Image (cartoon, rainbow over all chains, first blue to last red; front, side, top):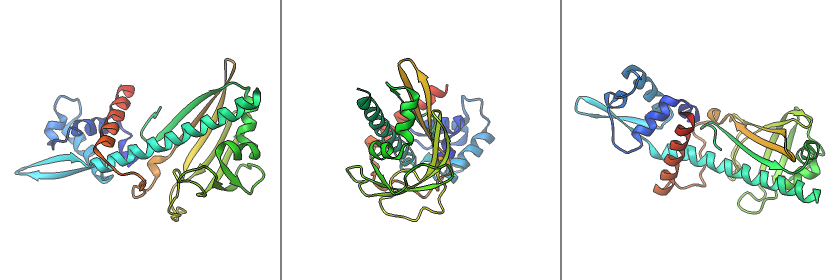
Length: 100
Length: 155
């Protein structure tokens, strides 16, 4: 899941999809230097990590995000970051109090 | 700062020389106090596993964890591998990849800059998720704001 997000193109796709509207591959490639083929490849990586899913509307496939999964990845990393902030604050206090 | 979505890096400045910070990091008696943990082992040994029990007040109290010491370069680098987060449900994590935690000490004016980096989240099983959190709309907005910041930094 985290590896799936560790790529600038995929992060941009996630941002484009984050407004909630389901978009086609043509929509997602528009205005970028990324080919439709590359967009398709990246969407499949996101789908493999459970972060995005495709649905059909008539002839066209449309993609949307699984917000729950993406939120979990961020919440988990934020939680780990907070634990390190707390641990470093305790280390700092332990050392500096002893110096006085 | 969250430097990417698969590794975390945090720093703090400590008004003490590197030798003093190194002792606090690696001498077991001092480590137990600031890391809020009980251990049976008397010292950190590269290649050895250490079992800890959290003495931190709150939901982690008495949670057990294991830490495999990787590298100790005196007054410079101290690293270990472990399973991140708190294993509140005592799940069997033996098959799960570990993350690498690295402390780095650098001289800074009037003291020492300590940076801790945790990496390898990308190798975690996609199935392991923090059950302690409930997703909500506010949480999602915060995630998107964080993603936007991340993109801003990458640009």
